[in-house]
Length: 77
Image: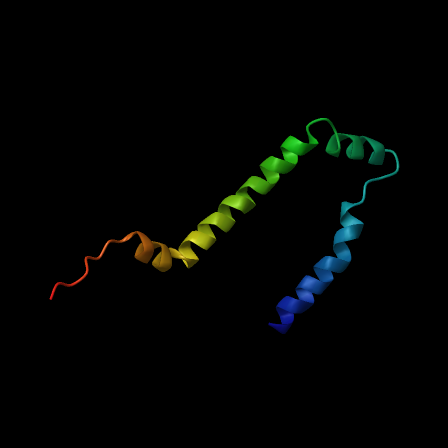
């Protein structure tokens, strides 16, 4: 576990250095990211997250949902 945490810390330290663009390319990269299709790209990027959240919530609450929609007749005397 400690090795994993050390690796994650090292990754977070090295991540900003590897993701920065050179001064010549940076304006083009920013223009491409924040272009006219930004909202559509962001939506497509976040769509799988929403689907995974819905599936996770559905699996977590499956017994309660099943109980609510399953009809069990009341016992007769």
